[in-house]
Image (cartoon, rainbow, N blue to C red):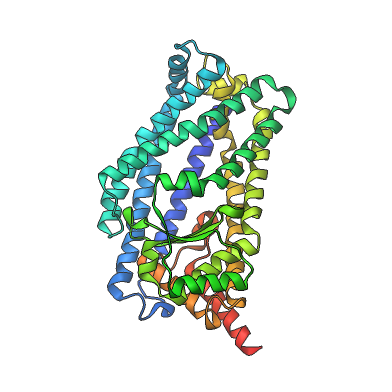
Amino acid sequence: MNGYLLFILSVLLVGYLIDLVVALLNLRSLNPRLPAEFAGVFQPDQYVRSQEYTRVQTRFSLLQSTVSLVLTILFILVGGFHYIDLVARSFNLSSIGTGLLFTGLFGLLSAVLSLPFSVYSTFVIEQRFGFNTTTVTTFVLDYGKGLLLAVLLGGPLLAAILWFFEFAGTWAWLYCWAAVATFIFVVQLLAPVVIMPLFNKFIPLDEGDLNERITRYAAAQRFALQGIYTMDGSRRSTRANAFFTGFGRFRRIVFFDTLMDKLNTDEIVAVLAHEMGHYKLRHIPVMMTLSIAQMGIMFFILSLFLGNPGLFEAFRMEHLSIYASLVFFGFLYAPISTVLAIGLNLVSRRHEYQADRYAVETGGAGSGGEALIQGLKKLSVSNLSNLTPHPLHVFLHYSHPPILARIGALRRLGAAGSGS
């Protein structure tokens, strides 16, 4: 058997088995006894419902990954990529045009196959547990806008990458890296004012106590805000969230309208203080830098496998091409990507603790961090969060610490502050 094919199949199967074991461990870690920290916050029936939500989501995810694994392996073994390549080449376009068409056809096939799972997740599972508020019209429009943005934004970027690898020689990987880094920065800059309004409405926060509290806290932290906005998150889900977005004069704080309904003023300010901590502690540029560095590693390794005959043989391809090399390399790079993702999640979880500390130390989290604790509890109940995830599941997949770990750290901070 082709060595590359054996490696790719092994990666797919081992990855699937690891996810299966971790998912089963996570289900076994569900504790029917409500943690004392949530007594009086999580009602018994709500807690049972949250655990059922975790079970349903986990089983559905396993079903989806099983179907994906089987279809992917079959597609590779029957030479599916070769048939897509033949269709793309039949239009007699340039190499870059053919590459765009090949990637587009493969992406469209993937999107179509994943669509039933997305529909079921949204309109059956999320509906069953009271989260979904998405109408069929909104779902279809979101799907169409997502595909359009993929073409309008991803198309030119992919064309540039293909051009560099075809004509720029030895240092093509470096030029690709620079192009992608620039693209990420520009998208981050434009997202709040161009991209995000395509999906949601952003309304300036009304004058009042909350606006004054936020403005006063931001001024005390010497943090300039371009604006404070609410977003109609309730159009799609009852879940609540808040985030900062943009840079410089485009920087703004956004609250989901669902968050405004679930938390009181002190708790909302505490959530803001946590998010501001990410900015003041430079977590966002750190994570962006790490992500861009990861891309540099990826492009360099990719440059070593372009047009590799053995790799193309593994996928039953008759023609060598740069564009197919990009797709095939993704299978080889998967283990490295997984390890790097685990590292990024580790850094992200550490950042969450640091942002919580910032909120407490600057007074934004309330006395002893209590306002932030209560806000986190309410959000956990509202989102039917799993209070007892398995440590291995957290290690592999969580970008945020488990809620009980965060609350424990906040209480220690509060106790240290009151004892000083």
